[in-house]
Amino acid sequence: MQISSRQYPHPVLSYNSDDFINSDFQASLKSTKTHSSYIFDAYCVTSSEGINQLIKEQKAKFAFHFECQTTRYRKVFSSFDNQFTFNLPAQYIEGKVQICAFIIAVEDLESYVLPEFHPDYEGYSFQIKKGDILAVDAERSFFAEKDIDPLKRIPSIFSIQPNRSEDAQAIEVDSSGNKIIIKLSQENFDYYKSISLNPSFQPILSSLIVIPALVSILETLRNEDTDIDYEECRWYQVILLRLKDFGIELGSHSFEQDSTISIAHKLIGDPLSQSFSALMNLDED
Image (cartoon, rainbow, N blue to C red; front, top):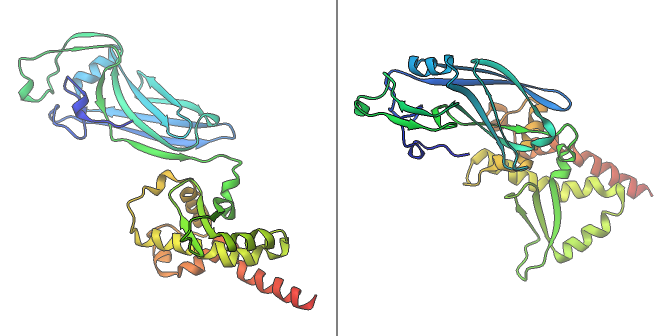
């Protein structure tokens, strides 16, 4: 849900406008997750005496609007109290969830005039409809991760597919979707399908195919040489979680200084050593 002051035909207390003088509105959320839901503790405060009076008279209230891009779930949680708690069932959301904090009108206000209005509004009054926004805080978002999600396993965020174009390269990587697509030339893909039938060769295939792709992704994240919003991609969130397991964060000293190939092997589980072991066993057989 995109917020813009241009949407409002009346003064709105906002971080990006000067409709109000010497007034602000701030809202915070703290979340905890249970097996089946997210529990949010909300705290809201505004220095506008006029809006505080409307809330006290229950003519306005605090509200949080949640919108999940993946599931299309939308929900508003509201209260007259500046501190309140609400639950959001985990089954309704997945991936990126946008959150907007408001103060909204509970009833029609025929003559909306507050002493904190900018002097440009002096002598004017406004008609407010029930549900209209009176104040808005900056947007925020969080990533809703399922408790049981096969994409938490790094290898499963990759999909290996044939590239049937006439000028297909030996290997190409597409990271624009929820999974990282590794495209192999038709000949290489046929080899891959045949070899993958033997479980003993899985580490070798990871070293040959997955590790180079993951190194390419890590280099991109390190250099930030793309305009793609990776936060929308589930593979990005999975990699962030996996990096966190090793105490690594994007932009940190360890991420910038360690080689991407070293980090990639950590994330996958050292397929190189397993590959050598598989090859040694093959030689013995």
